[in-house]
Image 1 (spheres, rainbow, N blue to C red):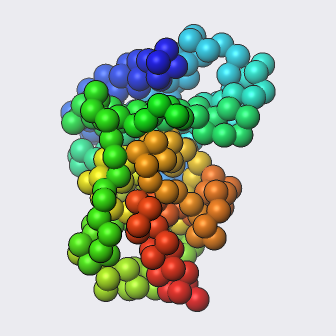
Image 2: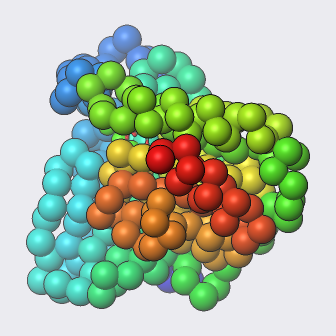
Length: 261
Ligand code: 2AM
Ligand code: CA
Ligand code: CA
Ligand code: CA
């Protein structure tokens, strides 16, 4: 669609500089926003490009940007939710698992999402009602039903973030039941992997709207379920997310709830 083309075009443009910067990581200016929350000149430049491109194509829309915060638009009903680099720690360490994440929220509902992994040239995209895709291939969540056959992604709380004790309980409960657990370091890509059926599920807490907004659209359009830990849809508000296929979502939710006590 025209909308997705705008989003994908912006992502590709911002990605060109990211790929260049990735090869010259030592040249980047890096500062800390929190105990382990790094931001580099590459994050800021990517965000600037995304903002300019999207503004050019849809002048009235507002923004929610990881680095720039909220920017009101004339059109109060539509805003972009953007993470210019999801997986900055990976990016700065020369680990290729990072992406650009762009979602469109309309009347409080997520209606389109793009997650672009530039080094693998993997463009995940989805629009509400029109399915999810990786490049031109239609995506479908995994069909696995047996927990013991599943690979589940998660995020480990970093220094300065609460929830370490609770996470260890969750991990203890899940690791005893599944084939494997993965920690890739980009929430947006974790959700894209669930949409693609590469991972059977993903959970994390303490996550921000720009980490998951686009990925949520991908998983839903690939036939999966995404909820918070109450089974509701307040993921953007409470920062809890559990994504899985329809067979595994309930069992995983139960496991996590029991573990948390
Ligand atoms: P980021 O790279 O955009 O900051 C992985 O668990 C998720 O947490 C990623 O989406 C990552 O997004 C985010 N993250 C990693 N380290 C972080 C930190 N120190 N503070 C805030 N968010 C962080
Ligand atoms: Ca960050
Ligand atoms: Ca992020
Ligand atoms: Ca980021």
